[in-house]
Image (cartoon, rainbow, N blue to C red):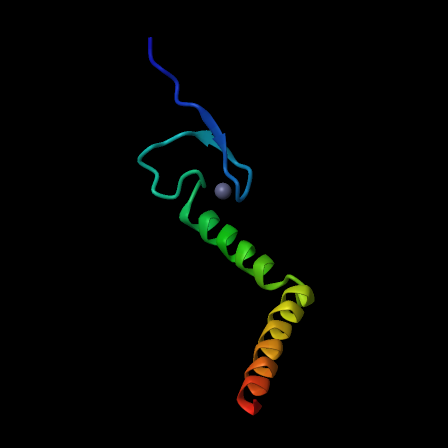
Length: 75
Ligand SMILES: [Zn+2]
């Protein structure tokens, strides 16, 4: 009786394959799928449209800090 390896679906292409602990690209079926998924992920990260809230908060804080510094300097 042989233990069957679990079948896992590649997150990149959905190709189902037996789990192979020797596969350096796991859980992807291949290095190509691994890279493609990373590229897609990176694009998604950078494609967040402007994230204006974060920018506003960040620049607002910086401007506030500068104003306070200027006020402190004048006193
Ligand atoms: Zn794949």
